[in-house]
Amino acid sequence: MKNKEILYLVIPCYNEQEVLHETTSRLTEKLNNMINQEQISPDSKILYVNDGSKDNTWKIIEELNASNPLIQGLNLARNRGHQNALLAGLMTAKEHADMVISMDADLQDDINVVDEFVKKYYEGNDIVYGVRSARKKDTFFKKFTAQGFYKLMLMMGVDLVYNHADYRLMSKRSLENLESFKEVNLFLRGIVPQIGYQSTIVEYERNERFAGESKYPLKKMLAFATDGITSFSIKPIRMITTIGILIFLASICMALWSIIQHFRGVTTAGWTSLIVSIWAIGGLQILAVGIVGEYVGKVYLESKHRPRYIIEKYLK
Image 1: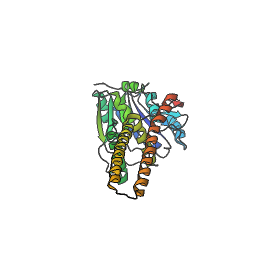
Image 2 (image 1 turned 30 degrees about the horizontal axis):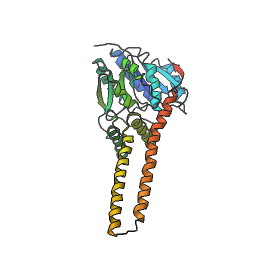
Image 3 (image 1 turned 90 degrees about the vertical axis):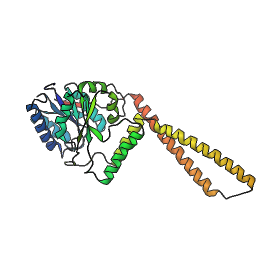
Image 4 (image 1 turned 45 degrees about the horizontal axis):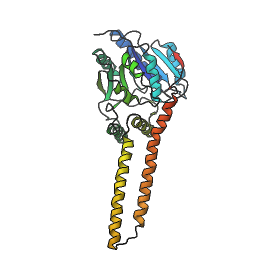
């Protein structure tokens, strides 16, 4: 069994001033216990990534870095979103660590399973996914929308680990391969399974947020789902083609029916059916243009090859 390999905990932060001290206290205790038990190297660290926070998040990270030898800080030049901030932390940590665990700052991810993550890594797994065992603490609406999100993604052909967010362990070599994925519109939950190294899962029960507000309201979750689908699946475009074919076949049937009715001498007003048809076909056309536009827009953004993040400062 491997011993004393370097572990980094990468934690993206956006307006997390309410939780940082408590998060640091608990994670420091956890890492020190693992170091004392010789599960990980004394060179292991906690890396906070400040994603353009508008509160005192970065100031607190600086203070923690000055007072706690386990704490490192990465400050992005501007807000780039959770996925880009996470990637910035992962790519920075891979230069120093043998294994990296990503988690949220709000203490919802159960830090008690970090030992199990590391154990699975030593057993030969390059990627260990944290998977929620249940959603007992979620509201009905949260549970319904979250499960709907995963089912929709799977239906659209996106390769996801069910009930897994971004709580995972990745080995150094899996992170080196993650770096080769160059897309600007990041959806790490879909990218990581494509790496293909040996992987496993660890189940845990997600806690309630320690303090502050959720950074993923419904609006952001819908945008996140759209990014995931359009980044990994062309099924929506194929659905447009299928709907177009069905409407064309329906129009042929309607034309034949109209001809038959004409020769039978049957006349009807037809105003309602005409208006409904116009609205339905018009709506489908606008929807189709919008879906195609999502893909065209992504191609446009990817073609610019702009940096996914810019690091302003790294506190070691």
